[in-house]
Image 1: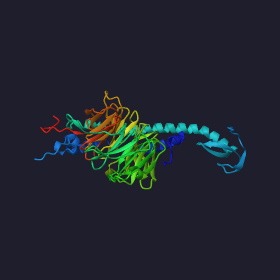
Image 2: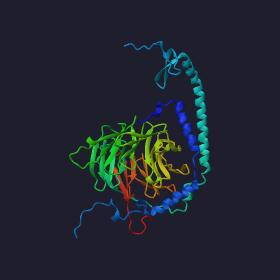
Image 3: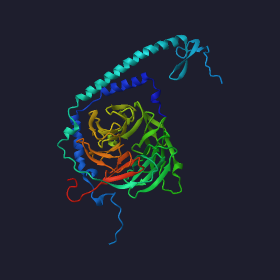
Image 4: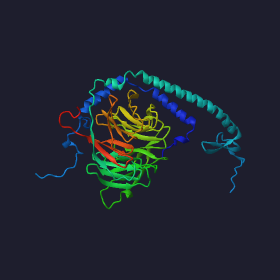
Length: 73
Length: 406
């Protein structure tokens, strides 16, 4: 069973946890949004050509195509 | 029966200084201790110091939050949609409902795809968990849980088991058997135990471990075989409503979202929160990693979906419209990450262009809230579950003559 029930903690303990956590987060190494966005854009562009929901699926290749009755030719 | 409490002068060893003195009961965190009168007095004056310390902590928390905002703002040199200005716009979008899965007796609350891209597990308010073959719409397995509101369900990576839970505060694993004589419920294994409802669950990369999120404000990692708690994750200030594991290549992290409006990223090994984001204005109902693992999206009761970049450590896009006023309950990305599908409480599904930040399509069909939504493992379709008791599998309508979108 998880060790703590968050509501049981007194205000002081919760604040101490929060302050410790914030101290850690302030020190994080961050990158420029421009650089990160560029990477996201490139990642998507490389792959969206193969993304079935973006480019569509030919009906005969669609695993969810309508069930049809068998035709014996 | 006598309901009086009276002070008894017990003589013994003080719980604080251990000296032999007359003791009085002192209540700390609802636990009774016995202090001598000196230590009891010190504790009373500590109470005064306590409120000073609280004020100091509060102001330190505020100033740290301010510093965090400053540091994040320094790197906010551009918007994602600006970077994406030259990207070709997506045109018209037509999705067709290919299958409607009917059989639940009440609201569908959760669903998950099997890795075989065909089977689906879904859970409902009526206590039933059903495994479907989405190609044929046949129900392959069904189990009735001992509770109603089965809010979470997940398929095991092997496809040989499912996990589910809800108001029973547990997460249970059911091996899937094709033996008609075997009762699925008989092989049930209780794995996770929380002190409040189970809101989400997910197997890790194997059938051996399960990650859970709960209304008790915690997430936890469990060993399926032994039911042992391997790691717990504390930090949310209220119910945790959702979680998603990072794609395996990215390493051992997961993201969770809660009623405290926070999305938190956790290190699974240490149990530590690595990053936290608090830009939503209401409960976060759904979180989903972006395919590369460098970002994640969230859907909230504040009627917006947002994209957070983990390396920039900030929100980089917000998907909203003035006309959308109902909460987003569930989000998922298409295979490349170009599209974000989001199910809403106004019964619709909105499809967003992740790069440009605009809506490319709105999908109707459900007759009540959309509560759950997942894109299939190979990205060829997506399934939505609703309070209208049904699940719908949709995939693109294809226009063979030229580009389907012009």
